Figure 1 (cartoon, helix red, strand yellow):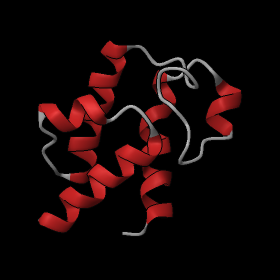
Figure 2: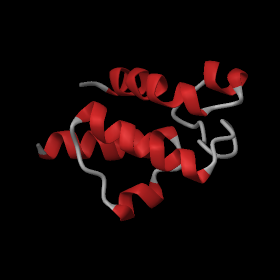
Figure 3: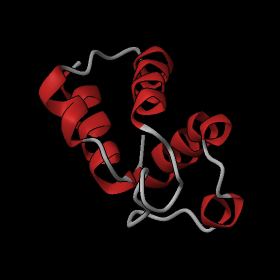
Figure 4: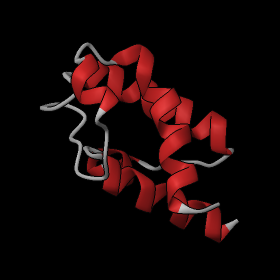
Length: 84
């Protein structure tokens, strides 16, 4: 799965949790979940759980704490998929 495909899937996962529609529509690798998309920390946990289910991967606590922007999320997802 390439980076653009990962971002497209991630965008679908994020949509229900964001309140900043303009930032969501302009989502890029540099988009920050908290400051740009106004996603709170509780919803970040929900996003991680949705990512685990969608991609059939496990994300440990260390990676979860790092997953604050699209670029990092994509890198973590890709590394987990590559390890499968």
